[in-house]
Length: 584
Image (cartoon, rainbow, N blue to C red; front, top):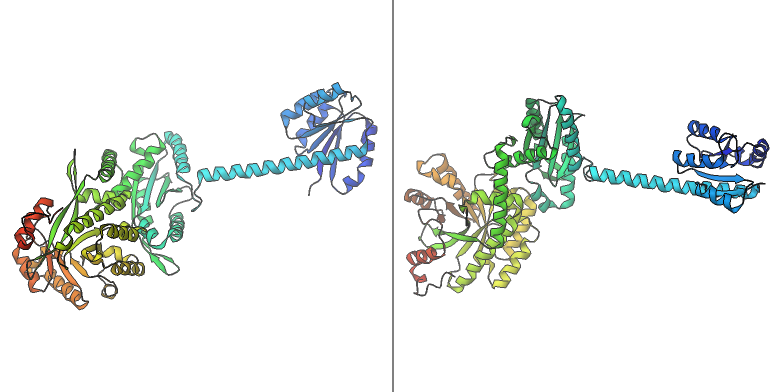
């Protein structure tokens, strides 16, 4: 521990000798280091030479500069240094004057050295406490500054710090500095989080941050700017180099992540904007790269998209579409159409597939291919999906006992819905409220969603089965199609993708695949629904292959409420009792 430095300012040489003699043990023990000067001017010079002075003892009456003037100057140099005045002029007026000039304490000559020792130790202890508090304050301020600029999970700069980096480079760009901003997102992050929980999802983000660091140079900045979103600021880089860097990042993130046996892989969407776009504000560059990234999420888009100015206009339109969709869900401005599912053996209707439709007052009919992906991207798929399930089950409850036992309504379930933690609770409350058996409901789930986490998927599907809810694997044949995996799933139906049905009449590869899928399904005790049947020839071929059910425009397009009444009466006359109560 360093000795406390005490500066003694007094022109009495005898006092210097007495102080040294009195505190010789303290000096030898390195508790104190006493520095002596004889004037205020010399004291200021010593403060410049010895910046780590802990306290000052000073007289008032001295040549060249008195003690009061020294007090004023010390306060300006370092207000934290405590100064104790030691003077023979100890009347109340002098004491008050000294205290007003900044003295910490006042001792009267002749000096009581015991009192002086107590005063020195008291002053040094207080200074030590003040320094400790200041250090704690500095640490707290440093922590606050860190938290304001960095992400605690990944230890990367956050959005605020990224904007500051761009701002600084924009100032330098007037001298010809070129840069690019990359914005990327993990496409399956939410499904991973819903499947494995927040802790595993956090580990994934940390691993992604680590891989990104290995892909960039020392001058480049990586920031964690959103839940599953990262931004990368590439300095002094040409456009082609930035595109190549994006390709390297894609390759690094395509490698599977392994967390104690849990394997997760994900595609990445990425957008890039370059410094020559003409923007002047940091927020504009980050927004532009974000906009381009969202274009990468769209069907048939490249995984890396370069920003152009027309995207901003489309992004604003998309934002308006999101707001309109949110309002439509809240005000229940959506409706369901129902496409019949028909037995290929008897031509009897065995169910309907519920299809959500949005007829906006100003936009007109909005295509599901436009608003369903938007709902999944923004999280609106949860309230939208709950409304579809509620409306479909409400209609089922109205039909009630008029339905045959094998009649079911199919509802599509997105991955975000499937892994939502409150899905089962919602279904239980819905079926209980409507006094409806789960056996009348069939959930259609795409093959790719079930493959993302097989063990969790099987456990969840078993809970649906316990509720007598039927399960169908949608778009079968377009994804993994693993036999060993398929036989473990507690599903009831395979739904043959329309892409095979379209070309089945040629008796070529699609015919062979269709035949194999139907044979596979039957070997597993599953029935098959073929979608997209448009010609009698397609129907007859599927019938000859023992495909149980079909749907498509050959039988009927999706129907609204009144049309379903008429259709049911035409195909199944027993439903036409003159009261038209089948549809509610």
